[in-house]
Amino acid sequence: MKAVRLVLLQIKYQERAFRRNPAAAFFTIAFPLIFLVILNVIFGGNDLDLGDRVISGATFYIPAIAALTIVNSCYTSIAMSWVFDRDGGVLKRVRGSPLPPWAFLFGRIAHAMILMLALLVLVVLFGWLFYDVDVPGQTMPAVLVTLAVGAFAFCAMGFAIAAMVPNADAAPAVVNASILPLLFISDVFIPPDAGTPAWVEHVSSVFPVRHLSEALQTGFNPFETGAGFEPVHLAVIAAWGVAGLLVTLRFSSWEPRV
Amino acid sequence: MAEAVIKVRGLRKRYGELEAVRGIDLRIERGEVFALLGPNGAGKTTTVEILEGHRSRTAGEVSVLGFDPGRNEVALKERTGIVLQHTGLEPYLTVSETVDMFRGFYPRPLPLDEVLEVVGLEEQRDQRVRRLSGGQQRRLDVAVGLAGDPELLFLDEPTTGFDPTARRGAWAMIRSLRELGKTVLLTTHYLDEAQALADRVAIMVRGEIVAEDTPAGLVAADPDAVIRFRAPRGTALPDGLGLREADEGLIEARTADPTRDLNALTSWALAEGIELEDLTVSRLSLEDVFLRLTDEGDGEVGS
Image (cartoon, rainbow over all chains, first blue to last red; front, top):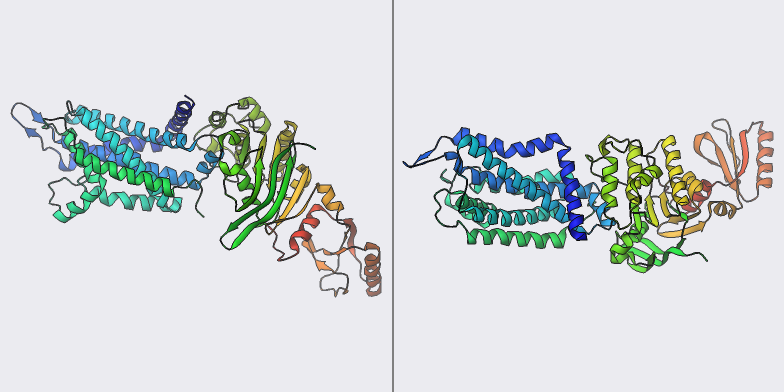
């Protein structure tokens, strides 16, 4: 009971601080929508006419934006805020207080997940209103499970990369360099049929972003007839999450690195 | 004998080759304001961080409120408050939200209004943290340290970077902590601060405590006097009196025998026809004692 109260307290103040910085909040929220618009402007109009129904081309961009949103909300923002809070003495202050470290951590993760879910709902709603995208029906459980596994794994990896970053000045460079190339080679920014060399796909298959992207593509695929679960992709993502968790537990620190 | 809040025996901390703390003993009693002084690199911060539980120790016994801080127990953290040198607070929350959040971590927090009153931030209660002045942010640091109504408060250089008015304000605040019955362990660079606030002072040099007493006792323990005066620039000073140039163009000498040395000095001045302007003979100040204790060796004094 006390644990729940402490985590809720963290989330409450995190949300409040987030809302108080309107520029940051606005662009965090606008970012995936901007992507949806840009992808439609560049690649748009590929509506599929099936005779009995028309599938909007935008439907196929939703999983890419969902993958990007998970990466941004969980991996990038957790890694950045952890390094900044470590350098700024926030973590040290927390550790000197009776707040258990895990309660602080859970507060962070919960905030990231709430934001991620809100953004995804917004993107799907926006796409449905303006681009006629298909909202998943029978594959919804698969989408939610993929989101949960993805959020866990990318949060864990966010904490892990934060442990590798020496200081706040290095954080944007290190975090972006670790994730942007993967987004490019994992069919997130560039559509699958763009003629990517096979070896690039083999390389990216080692990393979790492609698996996240493909699992989401199945989940959001309007032609999917089954439940849409992708156990192999989910297993790879989860394995990366466990690795991230182990690195975090072993190397994470609560004090500025001198 | 009063109850000891902090007991330290034979505390050592080694970082590789460097021994930062070399076997110190401390005893701080309930309700005391205790100041730990020393030049940079003397081991003050390391010592305090071991007591706070932020750092492990190499050897020695440490007891804080009966707990071993190395064990990281919540029950100890609920009874201590730590005011770090760096802020690390959420800039977009208000003063009262920040204090309230920290109050939420403790089982028996101090009422919000009381915290704000002690640190003098009642008028800023609805201001965002990022809009506070440097002095106000430091007060908020103290407020956060007080939120849980701690028995023991660690204050790490609470007035560094303050203007004189803000320092006086902070001093009044620390005095009111004493009135609340809090035990305070203060580290500071400022000798006048220790003299004004502390019941007892320990001076740390190169990992060891070289002196420990009340501020008055530290001064009284040193029978020396200081002779100070000004002489025209380029004057050849007499040998044998230990004269040296001090701050603000003064020449000074420390002496165990002020009558004899003053006689020698004035005889020389009369013979040379030199006027000794601003001539004074005084007891040592805490600063003189500190400088003597810390000068013995490399002469490196903290900024």
